[in-house]
Image 1 (cartoon, rainbow, N blue to C red):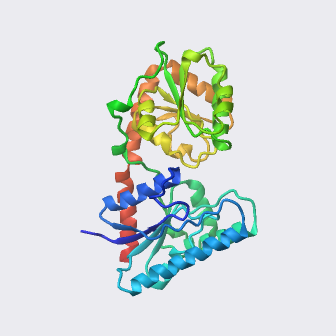
Image 2 (image 1 turned 180 degrees about the vertical axis):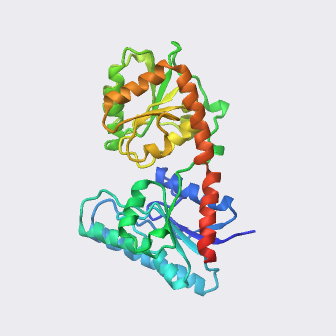
Image 3 (image 1 turned 30 degrees about the vertical axis):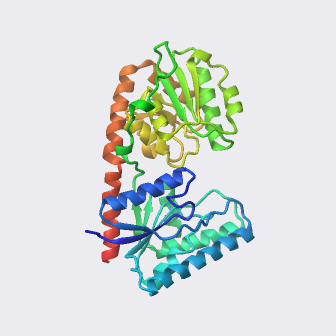
Length: 374
């Protein structure tokens, strides 16, 4: 039995977009979680509102396309299509405001909801302020605003007229997808028996490159310890990143290049410690994937990392920007196999108990049913 018909919209990137990203993955997970609970989820629009730079013409064009979508959706309902019972928008922010959902909800008199409405670090600009104003309008209209991280909650508390619409939702993954097929598990090229450290990240300028640099600095401090390193990923910054890790002996270092998701999971499954620093990481879904495979983490307590890694329980987190502490955390996990095993088991339990899609499905569904019933 269908509980409710939910119109779903992701203004940054629709869940069926051909280019993979964290945003697309979370959008897909939300749709799947609602479907698991018995809701009928329709992709309301594929209209992309995202504007990379504060270009007023581009912004106006995206807004005009969104208005055309409003008219299309309302015309379809007027012509006999069933109206949704509620509307859910994932990740509206100044660069990708939701111009569609609030207007449709007002016209059809149905409840509006958001997931991860947030404030970005973009500098003040008239274009971004237009986007922020639209986000403020939407979240104040919303019957509920699901928050994935505390920074979003704090932002909403500053702009909401009614703060009781804030509802916490733990980041989640579908643990049934975190499995390794034998065909995707070629042995790693190490014959020394040392613990395997693995990092996963696109090799591109910006935060990703910074994470690799932080990791290189930390590992250089414990270069005499017995460990192997696997770097999973590729991109335009690879030559620079290869130079960063040139101090690692060749027989202890392996670059995988670009690999498929099953191959990423296969690499993680053969790892002893996941060592992605997570500098300025908003959420870090890959930490949950590592945890689901029983791999403990050494990382920085930066932004969203503590949401998914429990310091001292599922991994060891160093203070933000403390490279020495990160090096010490990695060294501890390299040299203490019993500690690795304990944290790995805790990590697996933590993901299944707190961050699995089944948990999120119940939370999302109960709140959606409440606002529809109201």
